[in-house]
Image (tube, rainbow, N blue to C red):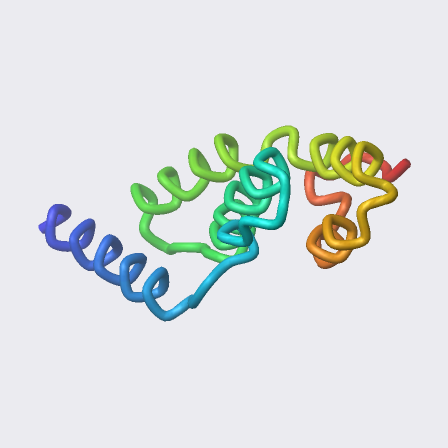
Amino acid sequence: MMAGRRLTYAGLALVQFCLAGPSLADDATLPDDVRAFISRRDDCDHFRGEASPDEERQAEIDQQLRTLCSGSDAELARLKHRYARNKTVQKALDDYDPNIEGGSPD
């Protein structure tokens, strides 16, 4: 029974991925480290918006949050500082919340 649920969750994730359209992470004009951050942070934000009443699925979500979101506040600040004079990078990063990890913003 649990395997069926996993397949369903995996299927839903695939559908969401296909419907999401192109990501800024695919923008070849952005530096590699910025594209990598955007890809990771988009995945982080996806899992931040997901919750499950199923304990096993919630444990998977929590693990993904730890893996994808840990350190992203500091990474966002570092990238914004590193590329402070690059308007394209700044525009790409502006939509990301600078304080998702619960610390006090700088």
